[in-house]
Every structure is written in C-alpha cells, then in structure tokens.
Length: 283
Image (cartoon, rainbow, N blue to C red):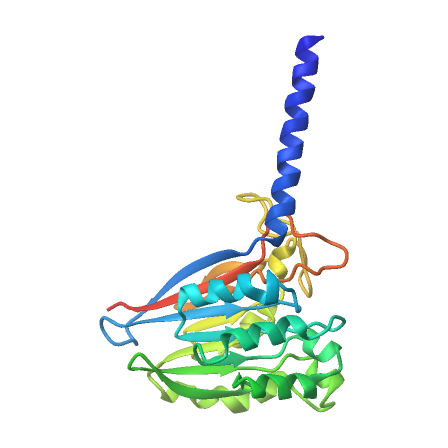
C-alpha cells in the first residue's frame, strides 16, 4: 500500500512539473541562434540579423519590455519581420509598442502574412509601419550596405493579397518579374516570405538565405521525436515546421513564431521564439 501511494505521489509530481513547464514555456520567449557562413561576405566581417514572425500582436511584459530588451541585447544590424506581425482580430497595440521600442535600432524590413490581409486593414498597417521607418518589401529588393558588406534584401507579398486587395495579383508571376535579374549580382542575397511551404518557388531564384514563418512551430512538439503537430497549409506533421533546412547551397530558416494568442491550441514544448542569425565570412 505504501509503495502504491509513493508511486502515485511520484506520478503526481511528474505531471505537475510537466504542467508547470508547459504553462511557463507558453509565455517565455526562447532565443534561437543560427550561424550562416558565406564567401560572399568580406573577410573578417559579420552581420547580426533578427527574424521576427507571427507576433500576432502578442505582448510580453509591460509595454512589450521583455521582447524589446531581448532585441536590444542582441544589438542587431538588421531586423526582418516575416509576416503575421499583426493579427486579424486583436488590436494593433502589441506591434505599436514593439515598433516604438525598436525604431532606429537597425534597418527594419517587413513582408505581409495572411493575417495582415485577413484583418482587412492593410492600408492602416502600411501607414503605421512607414511611420516607424519600416521598409515594406512587396515583390521587390534593395541592395544595402551593412558593416561594409553589400547584400541584397528581397521579399514577397502574401498570396492573400489577391483575395483582399488586388484581385489580379499573381505572386509567382510577380516574383518572376522582380527577381529574375538577381543572377547578375554576385552578392549575398536574403529573401523573406511568410509561407515556408512555397519553398520550391523561392528556390527558383538565386537567393542564399530564405527566411519564413507561418507555422508557429507546429504548435505542439515532442523534442527529438516530433518537430510539429500541425501547421497551416501543410496539415498534420508538417515537413517545414520550424528550424533550419538546407537545400543544396541555400539555407532556409523558419521561425517558430512569437504568438501566444492561438484561440484553440496551446503551445506545448514550443515556446515563443525570437530568431537570431549571424552571417559570417567563410572561404
């Protein structure tokens, strides 16, 4: 009888510990760092990039202080927002607080996700982003100089643009027109989009680093066993749930996102994620 009670107590402790971990990790931001090397950078140089995806207006700490402080601690050279920063149902407060805290820290680039369009407030979103100095990539690219390295930063609109703003919008055709000339540049090229499941379309162009979001890390993970349970547009056990994927010489990084606002499925063993990328020279 005593042994049975002891087993029950141990089981209760294990279950309680697991529950506490899930509850805490649900709201605690994890910072994931990737190192990407390339001979296209200047020898001895490096570039620090922060990838923010799927914030969905979530707020971490008073006035977004926890997220802002994490970004400031990294001291990035470039900040990239890969869509669904806003949300289709909640107020814009979370993004406004974030932008007011990081504006001027580094160049900020943004591409739309599906929720920017689902909210049907895309004009107000663009106006706010521009007011904070954010550069919106809309099937175009820029050549920028960071730490004496000339690099290409490119991005595409979310396909939902077709349904909620421009009925004749063709994402694939628009990318073809915008990016087919990039082969001419022997520069390091970064491409940003919201949806990872379209990777085969992105790989048609001469990008070196592709950054996406959208999956929320598959919402539920089992470390070392299941990378993600479910992702929009991929279904159960998605191939591209989150992390780093290599396609020959192209590196594809998928943020697990920052949202803690999912109405039905909690994040389990899948904390909100801020992605840090360090680009370094390698011969």
